[in-house]
Image (cartoon, rainbow, N blue to C red; front, side, top):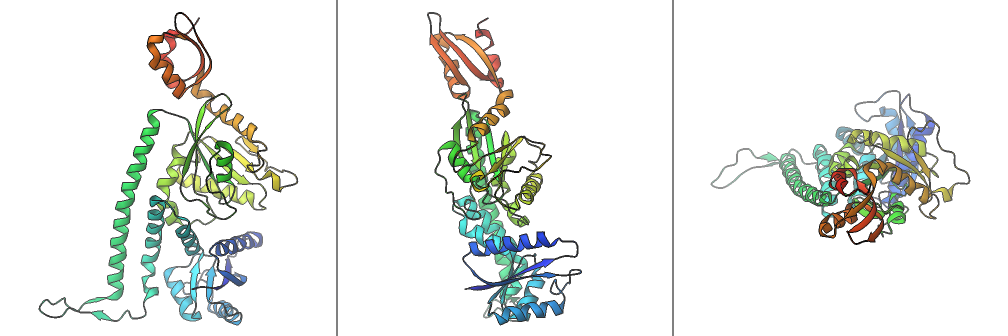
Amino acid sequence: MVERAYLVGVAGPTDSESDCESLLDELEELVNTLRIGIVGKEQVRMRKPQARYLLGSGKMESVVERAREIRADCLVFEAELSPAQQRNWEAASGMCVIDRQEVILDIFSERAQTREAVLQVELARAEHSLPRLKNAWTHLSRQRGGGGVTQRGEGEAQIELDARMVRTRIAKLKKELEAVIRHRDTQRKQRQRVPVPTAAIVGYTNAGKSTLLNALTGARVLSEDKLFATLDPTTRQMRLPSGQKLLLTDTVGFVRRLPHKLVEAFKATLEEAVLADFLVHVVDISNPEYEQQLVTTNAVLKELGADEKRMITVFNKLDRVPAVRLPKGLSRPSVPVSAMTGEGLLELTAQFEQFLEDRMVTMDLLIPFDRYELISQLHQQGTVKEEKAGDEGLRLVANVPNRIRSQYEEFVVS
């Protein structure tokens, strides 16, 4: 068990000091999330990447010496290490060596709860471990030969057997995940039979997405002040002031240098963001690095193909800052709120209404009683503002979705 970690940040020639310190601080928070003790950390600047250790051999020896002095049992790199570099560091230091990607994978493994999340994380871990199998064995020259009646030739190296097992496991995981995704697609199609507008809550990890979902919908989704508290998308329904229904979906949080394998694995989950009518981008305004986090989330959305969708930027955690200073040049609507105290939530729901205005038209209707299916449909898919029974039928003033407007035009009261 790893108990004493030494963190190593690697700065390139063009990296700013503040960005490197911020990333190293974030790595410290990630490692703390795994409940691993941190005994020290340092920032190392390199002129250009070296193939053997990423750093030069002199700096490698210096890092190993300092880690040994404070009796660390693990080196954790902020930069991504190749499988060969990871093996070389372990051989030189005699310690466990991991990088930021592995830390994030471990956190995701701990947080995964549903079948889909477990499969997605396991797939990402298997694909990450496949090129690193040599790290697990020191007896690669051993051969396993066949014996008895059936000869198996000269045998196979243990590493080849392990690689085959991992590849088989990857294929099985992908097949299982496809079945889960098909089930999710079926659920989505069932929701779309009674179409209700949808919005996806996105943002940096620990920005307060689940807290906002709870505040707007009255849900009781797990909401904790820690990284990646929730991995699985959670959808809840809310009613806007006009009576219009809206489905809000909380998605997995993003982080700088999120492992590409995780982005690929969670694309099925993040499809909720791609397919939503609009996005609610939650930003922690109390975090000194919030502008960088905003850029990171936008970059992941671009990778998913969701960056062009309509979006509301929600600057959350007003209760933690003495004065709000929003960044200049914002091209999209923005609302400062506190999901904890409720401040700004009325303005936010009003913005939701504005985003949905083009989906509805207000109509004054007189619908005969024998066309009750139209009345029922209006209650399910639209918003009934006024309703009064008369001799000829039911008089309604309602917001009618544009997609079904033609069904009601013959009943409009002139």
